Length: 171
Image (cartoon, rainbow, N blue to C red; front, side, top):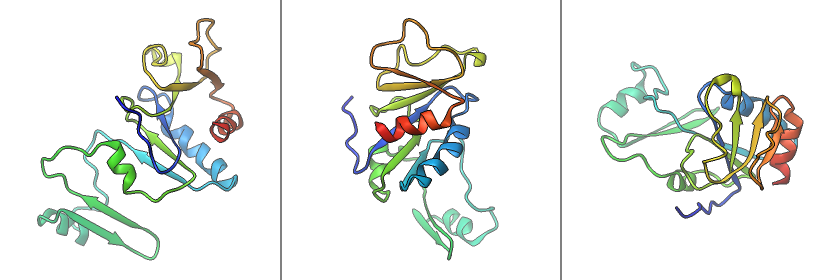
């Protein structure tokens, strides 16, 4: 697979469900923003996503057959694009729709050829991904660094947000 060449730096945040990807992002983004960075986030979901309750106008318009509905307010806007049985767009296409920023964090998309930070907790009972998953540049874990860590992979303390933010800023 050819690595994605985005308009802006990006890093994938991967790990097994329940290991703390979303929590880490929630805690890390404010620190990155405090450093003056503009940050985007792409979140992959395996569930159907409803942005508004079914009885609201934009949901009704979407159900009427529109391909895209752009909902706007004085606070934010969102574009809902209905796939209607079509294929989910590749990450590169999704990224091309986003504004260029200093850093884009991508939660999920573990098979995409992008640099990755794995969140790994041995207590999850699942094997780590870094030994077999390409493009992992660092692992944030609550376990000590293993002796057989693959060369080129950095080991970060999952409980040390400043260390993780410094790694993101330096990479």
